Image (cartoon, rainbow, N blue to C red; front, side, top):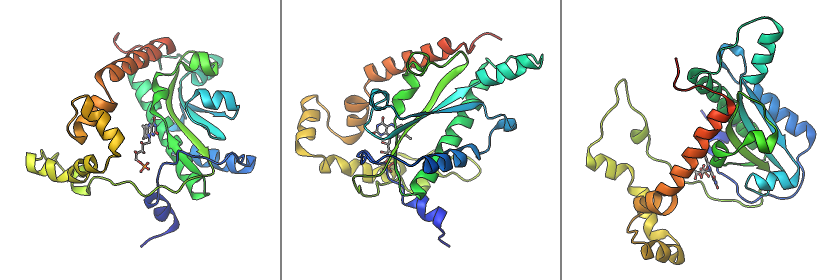
Length: 248
Ligand SMILES: Cc1cc2nc3c(=O)[nH]c(=O)nc-3n(C[C@H](O)[C@H](O)[C@H](O)COP(=O)(O)O)c2cc1C
């Protein structure tokens, strides 16, 4: 029972090379409408989008593309509305951060599907979590970076990238603890990527004592130093935004 939505979802691939052609305003608006049509807790839409199209600012966020779309957890706008109505504000707590994070990312993924359905290419960039949006985007308190997507017309046609088999990802009723053999089976295709790496990259990894794809992930790419630095900046972002994670 294929249909255009399913076709679009099954055809997803990240695009990392974009044509410089601008995206027409009507297209951007349609994408944003599709984004904000997403579900949100209490229909409160505790998020904001920042459409970044100043080339220097886009580049600062990590890629060359006509637009960088930043999704923010936004409890600030709600606070302002509450204040105007003598309603108390206590949305500075962990659950408010996490639920609004959910709202923001769901809305952002809606924009990705909408953009791809209109022939645009997209790529998420995870580093936004550790970006100081107060400094870079002038965001106020109770605003925290949730997600970032670059949008533009594709200038490459990458192949579909592999996915884990459904059995690896889907559990029925109860979480199934896999055996070692099951884990090996799930990751067989990923493990095989080690032999397909370009020789120069492989030599670099081997120079660091890295012997397989899993080690390339934890020791070559997402290194302890990288993860710790990103985590520190993320925690600082939570604190800078004024969210309370520990106190009652
Ligand atoms: C949360 C998140 C963060 C990502 N961060 C980056 C990134 O920093 N740089 C990048 O090139 N791709 C990034 N990606 C894209 C993934 O690398 C990509 O989705 C994955 O390799 C699968 O490829 P596909 O999207 O083409 O199927 C990110 C994707 C997600 C969901």
